[in-house]
Each structure stands twice: as C-alpha cells, then as structure tokens.
Length: 136
Image 1 (spheres, rainbow, N blue to C red):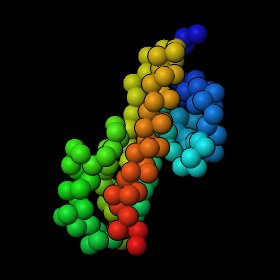
Image 2: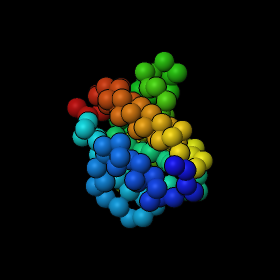
Image 3: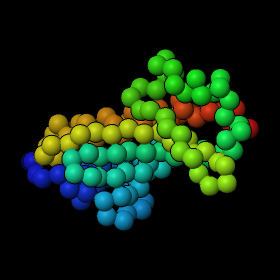
C-alpha cells in the first residue's frame, strides 16, 4: 500500500517495525526500540530526520584529537554523522544524525526507514565508544 508522506504514516510504519512511541508532538516525536536508545524523529515534507543526542560537555573538554576522531571517514559510523551544537553556558551538545528521503510510504520507504533506524542505533553504540573519554 502506498500513501502520501505524513508524520502519522511514518509513525505507523515505525510502530509496525516494533518501536515504541514515547513522546509525540505531531511532526516531531521520540521512539525507543529494543536497544533502549531514545531516538528523536521529525518529518518535514518528504524527509525523516533521525537524531540521537549523545552528550553535552563544556567546550573546553573538546580536544583537537577528539574532534578529528569524530570527523575521520573511518570512525566506524555506518551512515550517520556527528554534529556539534553550541549550547548555553559554554556547553557543546554532540548529536548523531541521519535521515531518509521518503516518497509514498510504500515498501521501499518502509525498508529505508527500518535501515536508517537500525544504522543510527548501531552508530550510537560506536559514537558512544568514540566519545567515552568525555563521559568520564
């Protein structure tokens, strides 16, 4: 079955994939799968943005070595990318992001959503390993 892309349609697919909807404000919502990782999702037009906030640290804790480790193409992240966001009080939030382009919420989109969610969960584990020194 194919239908127009909508937040409700995407949420239905995600729930069918076994994810729990834990927070819902319409086009922006949070889900949790069997991994226990909370994933933030936003549907805008035909794009599903997928985000996992990893850690918030003082900017002074971000070393050149760590920044390069996050940027190298061989950092172990499959498809997701890390982004640094300046916050209040000199803190930097490090977030993991991925997305998928949707067309008609058919089987192809279902597969793309499932793959993007699986990769961001795997990438979250790897990113947390990369950032382990910051958590200490």
